[in-house]
Image (cartoon, rainbow, N blue to C red; front, side):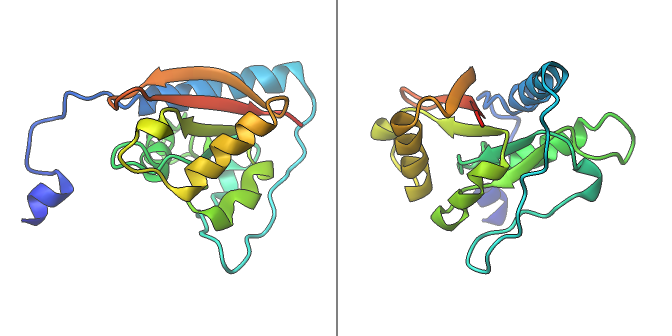
Length: 169
């Protein structure tokens, strides 16, 4: 039973969730942004006791932070963090980008500590969406000057895409 529940007992899925491309795109965009701007002050604050906490990697300080709002079985903060770790530029090195887990409402006040956001479109057609996803979608619609869409990726869901937004300061 557990093998089928966790999806271990089958050949690779034909679906492409774009996680490697997402990580690669954020790393490339952040490098270009850093080269064109000298602003890069640390904006991370300590989490409150009521929010979820993503583990910090001290060696990854100074790398772009991607706030992951999407929490689907194959597109979630864990898959993005694993891909960033696997794409490290050196053996046992820091992840290519930092991931911030923004999948619950209590974590949304950490958006200001992120450089980019990963969200999905098509929430109105989704079988399920979290309150955090709906709240961030509303935030992006309400304050378009704060969020610049830099890339979109197809995902195997009806009328949906994964989108990366740069957070403007």
